[in-house]
Image (cartoon, rainbow, N blue to C red):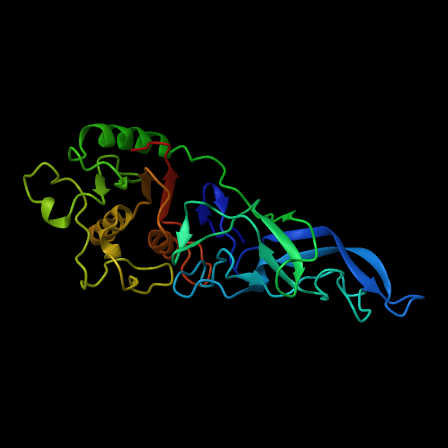
Amino acid sequence: MANEVYANGREVSCKRAEGKSVACFPDVCFTPGPSPSGVPVPYPNTGLATDTTHGTRTVRISGQEAMLKDKSYFKTSYGDEAGCAPKRGVVTGAVKGKVYFTSWSMDVKFEGENVVRHLDLTTHNHASQPGNTQPWTYLDSAAIGNPPECTDAEKTLAQTVKEELPPGRTEGATVAIGTIRGDPGSISGGASSIGRGTVRRGGKYAHWAKGIQRGEESKVKTCDGERFVYSEGGRPKQGHAEAKIIEDYFASGAKGRLVIAVNRPPCADCARLINEVNKGRQGRKCNRITVCQSSTGQ
């Protein structure tokens, strides 16, 4: 099942993913034979994302944990079961050992740790470190371009970044533009550099999304029909550009699909918000929000 949570255009590995590191070779294990210690035999070894262990604790993708750099692993691997002589793996002394990632996103993090993705590398049959194999590619899915409705939203975003951001406050700011599909006049902007109090009636940013204040109940309903709850701690997540737009979208009662163009990948909290609106915690298919991965920078 595609979970539609991407880092750098590549699907994030998580327990609900269908990703695999398939037939990693060679996984050399001692196999019963003429010698008491066994004969070293190379096996293909496979690890599955559904065996994710020690993943995220607060961030969920389709209701399950996501993989993190070094902390997480696939708890078992498959294919070397015949290598059951006493020494087993020639390096690790294991069979059906853990799978660890050896590469990850450099700039997308969940809970302060780098996430791992489609096409990142793994090593297999671990007891601890190192593994019993050479690096092997993990395969899931990649984002396939932006849908047609993103074109106009991206143009508006580029113009907004150029003309409307407060002078001197563009560095590091996340800027997003939301369009309700089927109602071209219904457009609102959001930026991490523009606070709720700045969006006053008649002011320069009057048309920008206000969102909600910290402690205020969210207006967002997830795909499961439940009220969304923001994670606590750190800077308030309600003030993120995407969250402001999504809150205003739900407060308006609009029925169309929300298209958001944003100038950088959504953070872990906004990714969770978008995923729960689109799929909830049980992998349903509401698909009320489309996120356009814009190339517009700061």
